[in-house]
Image 1 (cartoon, helix red, strand yellow):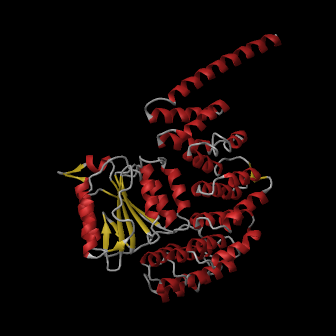
Image 2 (cartoon, rainbow, N blue to C red; image 1 turned 90 degrees about the horizontal axis):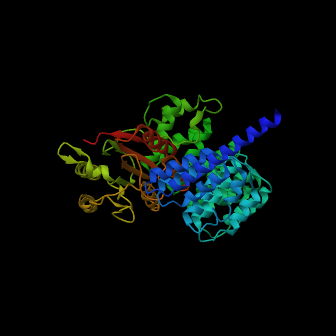
Image 3 (cartoon, rainbow, N blue to C red; image 1 turned 90 degrees about the vertical axis):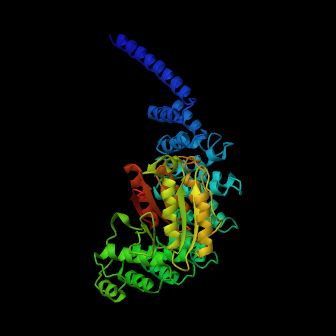
Length: 499
């Protein structure tokens, strides 16, 4: 009887295996389908099988020509708990692949995989990457940092520390060195302390920001001292990080320092940001009345509860002289990113296209910019279409040139927001991006908005640029993600009918 049951079980296993083989063959065929939606669905089904042969096919999809498919593979691989798969991604299918985007995607995956990773393997990977591959090295450092924070880094962590520390002290890209500093400060904050102190007094602003970021994890008194000192920094991005540190502390001394900074701060975005934080934490609405805020601060005992939003930059508040499609403008260093994808041209409001309405909205915004404002305009389709390489003064001549450029611009295509944002971030003067979009990025190497937000927040750590967004007919699920990007960068997000 027992042997009969075993025989039937063996037959069942053979049937299931044959069925699995057929499923795999069918899904492998679907990975070659002409429609990216079909290929993406195949990636999802393969990942759901949780077998190694299926995962190998998902890894292969990292090189898909459509970002919808490649992003899906990247996201799903990051959820895999297969340690052997993680090790294999260090090889030719991942970090050593010929395709640069496959290498970059594999490096990002490591920071999210819920498995223990060998720190020594990370160290070897970091050491083997070409020094010119700045983005790949930065992605690996971020994954080391995330794995260490999640307590998923096993083995000899000192080797990973030394590999990252060598970048901190090198002459590499400044933001790469900042990422390396975050990695070593997470791996071993005591050993990293001298490097953090040195970064705080560095000549280059990105390193000073990185030093302040690391100091946010130090003792309350040390964080307070270095952050108060950094409020005097001439670089706005450094002051932004100092303000964030003080907001995170939430102590009486930190609040008093913030109130004083609000009084003397010359950049509107920063002043309104401090005011927003004070209002949110106090429930009071006394405007820029510094005496009233000091009176409230003196009653604070201990540290304010910051809740789940600890460390987030809160959106600025208050009215201003200029607005764009219903979004008030409070920055004097602003870049407008305008989505020129199909909906801009195909959707009509009455007898006019959205583009014709946008022409009017931008004209009203630019002509109302206060004196001293510097701005740029970057429409985007498959590629960004910048008006200028850098911000320019908002005098009558430049405003006219910008409007002429925008009104004559008739390119259309898929909306590659990610590359447009990266291009705008290259300008060191920019402190605010105002994005007008339908909320659904469709072009370029990035498609998954949730993943895109994580990447942009990391990319923005040493720039401290606020992302404001004006959404036109965006799906609710996408609107929530744009609101998250705004919350995490000190920006705001709103919806409009664009009439």
